[in-house]
Length: 277
Image 1 (cartoon, helix red, strand yellow):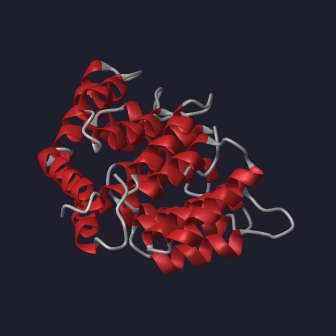
Image 2 (cartoon, helix red, strand yellow):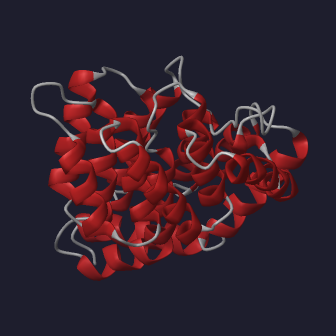
Image 3 (cartoon, helix red, strand yellow):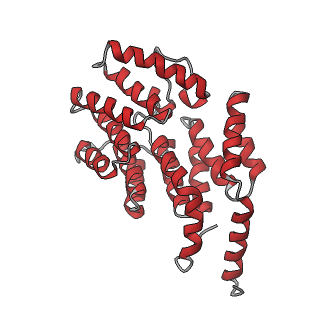
């Protein structure tokens, strides 16, 4: 379903149902370390599995565990990064930002840290500050694809779509076929209401060897928004434990509860394209 500029009211209706979720997904899928522990969300010494495969109780336990490690050694770079990551996963964006401020103070030239700091700022709603942090961390002579992808995610949330997609493509020039970047690019098209293009990029992302569960959940979302819920549910259930899969599917169902509205919206667009609207 691609919305034309001549139907701004319909596009707004679509975005009201998806933009808040997509904003969160863009930040979440914007990995800072490619295939490191932060990409999957696993916590060294604090959990044995990736964060995105945990339920709410397990996330809470992981937060306590890594929080204790951070208390003992607040200047440890990796512990700080991991603690901020789990805090974001449990919705404590303000606390995650405070942790990342300290990590950035102790590692002022570490570009991975600065990218994560920018993510924390974006998660706390400080979008302009996040963009500044990420932009300052980038160096023209040795550009980092992680920073370009993070910059794109923030630009998307600021509504600067063309710049965001240019940043993603720049990241892909540096790191071809990187699944997290392809996923972000796909979600950018979802934000714009172009579900077909979004699906194309997300399918490509999901097919890459390094794709994690969040990429596949993004693909499930875009497929579900096109009314193909059975297919979306199959994707949402892959590689997850039954209870986590049930939670994901329940969330997907809640997001797609207005599926009849999406179908009617698509039908009206089709009629309009045929001159019958």
